[in-house]
Image (cartoon, rainbow, N blue to C red; front, side, top):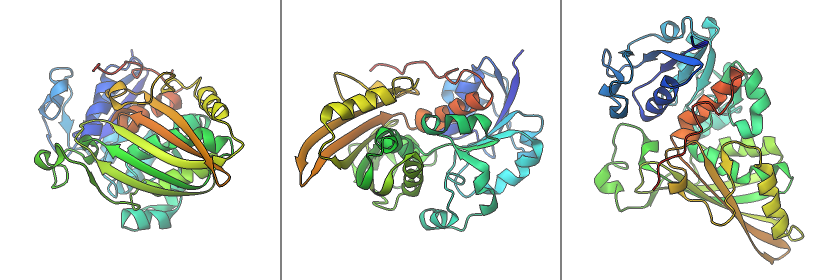
Length: 349
């Protein structure tokens, strides 16, 4: 018999589909309820064709309190600005909470207002949430009652820069371009995600104003970066899954290329889901459909006393950038092997 029970609130979206897929095969956690205002009464295959016939459960129209009753953990896969209104209803249940939205990632309510365009509904709860990046906060996640799972772009940028921040080498301006697949825009189509406009096209959106910017800055500062200044430009690409980020930074001129490469190899040597390829640079096709992240650096020449450095990272936005990372945090919180249900490699090619 499985030891723990889990519920998903907001199970009809792409993130919900990945949560359900991982939880259905989890050996220690039983998926007990999936709440949604869409597809009510239908089996999971009604919304997610890959889940056809894999469970007798159905989508239910439940209040947050009803969904959380008797659960050990509740995943919130709801839109920004909606999640924050649901958390107060779940807290009395005693269940652990893992939120996949951006509502509790920031400790600064003013930054939330600037980048999300609204006053935070529950600023008094911001301090209750631990930022769910295991590569930085594993011990805090283990002790947490509530976890805010990181954003997809943020995860990619942060993991690409984390070794530099922890070594005290990251300071000042960081220029980043991030390329993302269409699944990150959610189930509902829009003018920017509709296939005829997305296929064969590249377009930027929210340049320098993307909502993951303050999240990245808070995280890098917590890791040891000094006065980081992120200038982030996101780009929509004709992919379904995947994020590829390229960050440009400047290091002191006495930091050698060999030291930088060794720093990354050593920093991620014991991380189960971060790979540092030795004979190639990261590629989306190598990680799409999996929990794995690829990270690499290319040191450049010295100019005006600073050494140029380019940091690359690639991940699947729905897995390590979304639901898979949330499951990883759940495993840590429940004192299970954090790799459970997440070690499968993605398809090739």
